[in-house]
Image 1 (cartoon, rainbow, N blue to C red):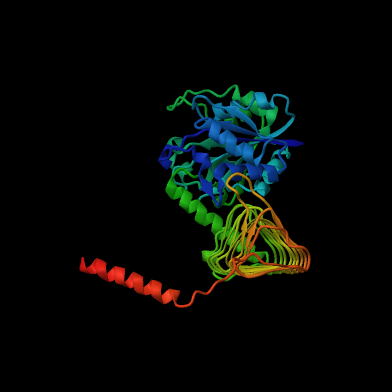
Image 2: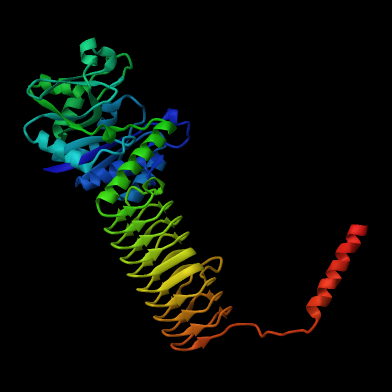
Length: 451
C-alpha cells in the first residue's frame, strides 16, 4: 500500500527568539524540516505534504529546494495539531493508502521506525502511535496500553492520575492511519478543552469508539527529540554528531579525534577512510574508500574518490570532484572543478571552474582567474601538464597535454600540447638603483622625525 507523509511545519517557535520559522533552524547542515522530509523520502513516501503557517513562503522555498514534488497546505490560524493535519485533506482526497504524520521540529525519526509503524498498522489496527520510554517522563503525554499491547488511550500529563504519571511510555505525537479513516476521524475531533484546540491525540479514543483497535510501538528516545529553543538545538546537534561519528566508525572509517569532526546530515564516508582532527563536512559530500582527509579541512558539495588525499587546511567547495589518487594540499581551494586521476594541487592555489587532467601537477600559488566580474570562464589543463609556481591562468584558456608554464607567468592564450608557455615581463637590472632609492627614503623618514 502507498504511503503519504504529512509534516507539520506551521509553528513560529517563539522560544527560539528568532524571526525565522522554527523548522528552518539548522541541525547538521540542514533545516530541521529537511531532516523530516528526508526520512519521508527514505520511507518511500509517494506524497509529502508540508503544512505551513508562520513564515510560509520561506518554509515552502526551503522545502521545494530539497524536493520539488512536495505539496503544501496552509494553516492560517493555529488551532491545534488535528486542525493542522486537516489542512492536508484536499491534497490527499484521492489518495488510497496510509498516512504518517511527522513534525518539522522533530528531525531524528528514522525511516525504519516509520516502516515498523506501517507493519504494525497492517496487522489490522486502525491507528498506530509512536512512543518512547523516557528517562525523565516529565510532562509528556502517557500511552496507556493493555497487557496484550493494544493502545487504550493517550493521557495528557495534566489529566493523568498519579499511577498514570508513573508510566514512562510516552507519546511522540507521530501517528499512522489509513488516509480515508484519518480524515474521517478528524472530522469528529472537538475543541472542548482548556486550550480550545483540536488535538490529534483525540483520534485514538475516537477510533476505539468506532470499534477499531489501536496500537503503539516504541523507538529510541533520541529519535523523538523535539526542538523548541536554542538550547534544544545545541543538544540536538550534539546528539546527531555523536551518532553520525559512531556510525561512520562502525562502517569502517577511522576518525582520529572523533569529537572534533563535524558531519552533515547526508555525509557519505566509505571504508578505510582516515579523517584527521578538526575536519568539517558541509552538505552533499561523498568520500570513497581509502581516501584521507587531513586536519583542518572543510568540504562541501564535493566528491572525493578512492585513495585521494585532501589537506591539511584544504577547502573543497561545491562542484569539486577529485578522481582516484588525486592530491589537494594545504591552503588549496577547489570550486566547480574536476581534478583528474593522480593529479596534484599541493599548496597555496585556487582552482575554480576548471578541468585538470590526470597526472597533472599544479605548482604553488597557481590561480585560475575564472571570473571577469560578470561571467565565469573555464580553464582546461591536459594530462601530465606541469603548471609552474605562481602561474595566473586567465580563463577561458587551455594548457595542453604534456605542456608546461613558466613560473610567474600570466597565461592568456592557449598553450598547445607539449609546449612551454611563458608570460613574464622582461626583467631589467638597474645597477645601484635599489641603494639610491633606499637612501632617499631613509632621508625622507629622518626629515619627518625632525619636523
